[in-house]
Image (cartoon, rainbow, N blue to C red; front, top):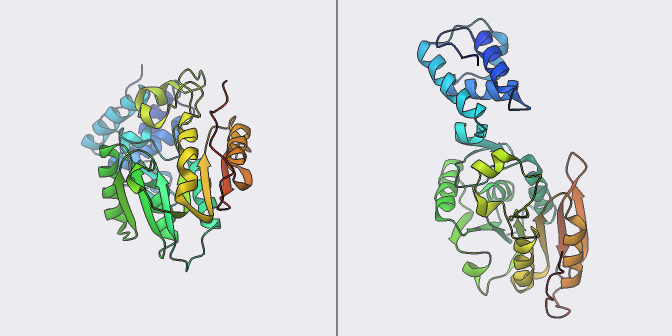
Length: 298
């Protein structure tokens, strides 16, 4: 197995690291550049402009250690302890799910239902790092965003992100789904809940190994968390308020059926950049059609 030398040029370090990472990562070159960027404080643009720059010995050694961690499957975001989302640089850790590009579609749909001047209330259920809540709050400064999570570790991290971004219109609450906001109503409720079935063979091994299980797995079908949210969402939405949910790319039809059955209108799904329906939304008309039935089996 080739090793990354302790003292070498940027070009050599990236080449050696890319060769090593290509055995386990489909984005080996990008991973190497991001890790070297983290170690040196230099930008990837700088690397390309100055490929023969020599790395200090301590930087080379640190880079080698990070490359080894990545080669063992640890996500780059956890190694760097940061991830960009909606042009916001967020702190992340194994206590929270790594924010992903497709979740930005949730933010887009929430923003589509809020005017910039409206002092509305928005809830983000299972906020994790605070990605959705912070993105919405940064774009709608008049809105009051309530971010809820059952993990105290996640909330501590989200609190640091709020402080770093200096957002004053976000509050954090500890608890499961709607428990901390009993009796409260919102104009929009968003969530990227767990939606992976416990025996899903498509779940990447590095995701299963490193990311928090409680943020990923949702029972036998993968829809248990979404069912739990749907049971109580009507009592927490204002008339004409919106529910916006992320889900798996094979789950859109099932989620639409659940929203319609619960009494939501204007139910529709939206595709991500890969063409997969990953986000479904519905508007609450203000009158419930009947009791929430048991979720379908299978």
